[in-house]
Length: 237
Image (cartoon, rainbow, N blue to C red; front, side, top):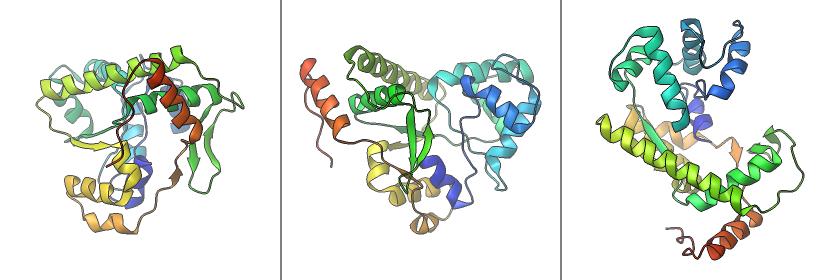
């Protein structure tokens, strides 16, 4: 949702996960480049990603998960030389601004991930049609071990980003999924201000995606909390 909103502004690039290891081969094909993988992509791939992520604006937007960061830094150093993490990133993409989006309710997020992994449905358009659906299963089955695995991974990601920001003296613009879902225009306005753009642009935009969570998500999260003797989810503010 956030990537789509940023693209709609017309000033904040068109963010995608260009450097997710599992997606690099597909992106290289989409760019019309020879086959590439996370260990061999070259400067032509980076240039193509920048062109796609800029999409006619003055800003290159990219979405990156924590587990993609080490590989990106390693590859950039191999192609462009050594340096501090921020130096390497700035040298590759220009002066960077960091927006840290995370979900406050990690159990709810872990449940959502478990359901998406089982069903293959990851994104839905605002009109209710499927945006990204691999049609893996019609019905998801509650799996305590899978939810725990997803939750551990999410906590590791949070720790990784927290430590990396601190080590590199970065104060990112922080936003939660809960706030974004409740007030997308307001949160987008804050982001545009952070990026140095007119926040009023946000007032005319509408999210292009639809929330996937339903009663099953709520029930699974409640069951997991009860089974693990965890406190209930905090009430929305």
